[in-house]
Image 1 (cartoon, rainbow, N blue to C red):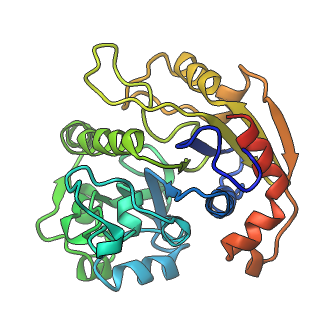
Image 2 (image 1 turned 180 degrees about the vertical axis):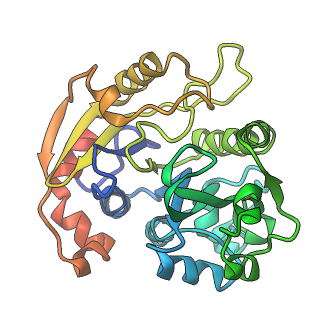
Length: 320
């Protein structure tokens, strides 16, 4: 990136993934990166294709979102606040921010699927996770959260695991109910995959910088390689930042994507998710950088994060 100007790649696609620790600092790194790119002339947008939170452990975040009958998490809210522009809306090519018609940057527009969990000690949920159970998913929503669709774990609901205020605070009366893994996989194919495909298509066609944050320690949150027959969208990732407490490793985007495909055996969405370390074990980083510890106040200010992590961000964009 040239000093004070646009990156040599005018619309870079940057992936921020986490190492073995779920709380590695991905979102803090991502919002600072958005501020860094904005200071260099970009109008970046941050996206988090998949996210989730826990009804018990993240109850404050749950209550903030559901107060308006919506479901999203703190990470998506932070990304929306730090983003400069919305993902391009190709369905409304005449939209113009100066005319007031550009859709709002809502958490839902950056995060097409959000999952709500609850702890269930001693019980393995439908999705095979020990000691916790998935309650419901919000799919889509975009700039207008009223377009959201909900999918409820019907088995958990029948077992009395769905808290009453979840049904009170979210529009679940017309939600799709799934009672077993077979039914859930069918809904995944019919409802989730088209949403992810459209979202990846929008990322690929967006006319400025995109920072995509993964979730947990998953290497890539959506399929970015498409199908051989061209039936699903594809995007290129220019560089990858794998964040861990105190440092970040930078990888070439093409090599990282190829390594992920080798690790999974397929590039298509719906295959087993690969963990970041399974991918990075196959390739060497092109660079590394230290990340200083930040106070809570600093982490909440994208510009302060951008200043503190400036050296790491310069290393990242030099890898494009």
